[in-house]
Length: 388
Image (cartoon, rainbow, N blue to C red; front, side, top):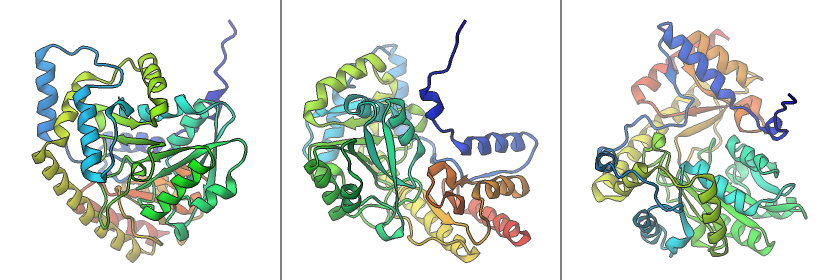
């Protein structure tokens, strides 16, 4: 037998934080108290109304395939959501319900990206996005960004790095790991620049809703010729339900449905019925209460890290992360994270998970645990760095 791994697997990078998480679980099994600030998952339970809607559907016994594009009523709800929140008119035929935002990325790239084509992205960025591009034989062309652009790609950078091989650009706002928003005028310029260059614009909006000082703008406010990726995981608290959505330019709708039919058949039926309740008035009120709690956590952690000597040039606008410069303490943030976990039971994510740009000098802290627990984590962190 001549068994060989596909060459593409050699291009896919691992999640380094998973090694930390695995060790954290081992330490917990041994009785050590570990404070988790590494995983990007809200600690709140899924709102009860969403759970009940999913259970009701399961109890009917009619858990059959839905159309590949998703439940018609859920697509209508999402279209109404864009009309109300962004004043953007989106035909439901352009909306596809997917198995999480990851499924949305697979459809967006599967219908638009050819082998050897490049996609421009910021560095630092969420690593899975680069790996999705590699999966389809494309190239992730990462561009170093810093506080001057709020860690976001600019229209000028897109023009500067555009080549004959470039297919488009991806912007995430709020971003992971920095939590920064792109300003509306900057997003508009970036969208128009990509459209003028004849490329595809991909907007990662999965942290919309989790913004604190100003509203996030959707790329759909500036053009219909964009791919918008969103999810019920973060703001709506439905990580394990695995349901997201994708909005495509009209000319991509037929191809996207065809691809969805072949790759997924359909998103989990009970998850889609559960997601319908996410837009209910009472659920929205609960989600807004949670957003306010995340804002208080951000303020607490931001102040605490600055006091300890970490550098944070920009206070995050959204999501639930702080990307802190730890150069004062180490030149190897991965080893720093490993040692911090072993010594003090605090789990954080090293910068090498998010690219090459000053990665060894950065750590991502997720404020997805209570202020009380974070307070203990900061005491442990202070003890750790003082020992060093």
